[in-house]
Length: 443
Image (cartoon, rainbow, N blue to C red; front, side, top):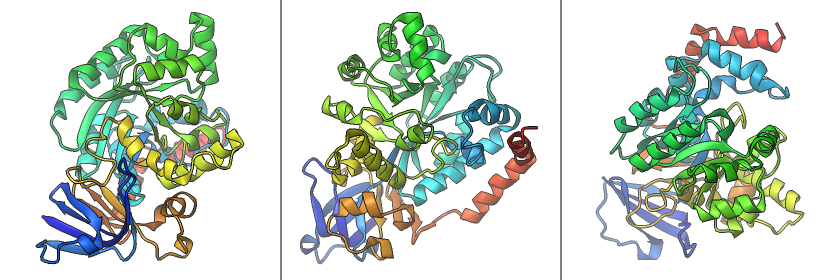
């Protein structure tokens, strides 16, 4: 199917950062055919569908580089407790999480991301086979990675059994156009050296990115300093697992030498400013990472950590925190922040040849942000409008691989109320709400 979208303010995010204030885009099936200024749109062009953008901002689909889509049920639970992970999340996860709850949570989370203009995501959680099936059904693009940790989990019966799960899970999704399977050790401190090395081998064998939480916690930094006289990054280099396929989530506590190592091995970084600051963990050295030539993308973290699954909130938090942290209002102009949410995220996931920019030959993953709402006028700079004024509610249309999944701020193939009802039923069946309320009451 050939689709033409006209009268859009097109932000290509390409190397030249071209934009067409009154532009068009032409797609055929899952690819972008052409983009340019309206005056160059062929008058005799044959097409199957034409959409008038009416001045909406058209940009590449956003990329969420780190999340946990199975954790929607935990949103708003014990947010302000310092020990919420052990008091609420781990116990309820062990008692209630199952295939159905993870699957319905995933569909709900993907719906939330699509409605917010996120077309690609990198997830790490449990029951990833079911989560991958949910992503496939929702026509999303994603990398789904099974978590490996040194304890029994909700989907494996022995510590670090996630590795065996991943070994079976990875080949099932080879060759899929939109979905990749992967592996995600929880953290350097919660896995053995052998498991970390085997995970790296799996990533190399199937040529997929893999992920791990790294240099996120102060106790983590203390542990490696005391036990190894190293930082976690230095430890990972010593055991030989750093590579261009490795995505290090968070990286809040980095030394100068850590940054040198990340650059040396072309490691990618998923930066989750919302979750990191909400939990008072700190602000990562993103300016130094980018200055060193390290790929950085934005992530929401899970809905229990960052609460929202949209990158508009992350872009604004990024601007506010980093400018304050650096005491420099001019730090990170809006255009640079939009890059992090689009082509920056694509580079983190190793997908920059497929997505992240509006260019002929790339996948037709793009969004339209309407400019009719009260918060979107006037616009002197579209990048500033996206970072400082826009919100997820301004996303009007979303296309993934040429298929429209959101139109007029509504899902095309799914009913939001039905998705919510299915998730609510799954939560009810496992007694999630009752147990959560008891935990909140301290019983």
